[in-house]
Amino acid sequence: MGKAIHDGKVESATILEQTADADRLTDEETLAWLRCLNDVRLMLGTHLNVTEDADIETFLADPATEHNAIVYVALTELVDLLVRAVDPTAN
Image 1 (spheres, one colour):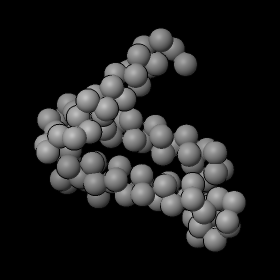
Image 2 (tube, one colour):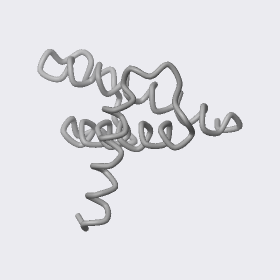
Image 3 (cartoon, helix red, strand yellow):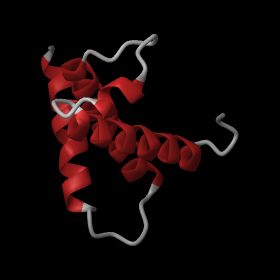
């Protein structure tokens, strides 16, 4: 990972941490949350070996992956909500 990418990830995580108790987020803060949470979601999806063809129900039904799958699904929903907050026309 290049330094600029790493620095961007650290900046997004810092913004998320600093605004975790905020009642409202600016557009820039919302984008930082979106980037950071999606990075975590992708990392977790890689750990679970999620693919486009994967059935998340399989991960939810397996006691070894259930907890990670629940967090993955929650992050997916949260990322979707943030995308819609940034762009209400997003599907």
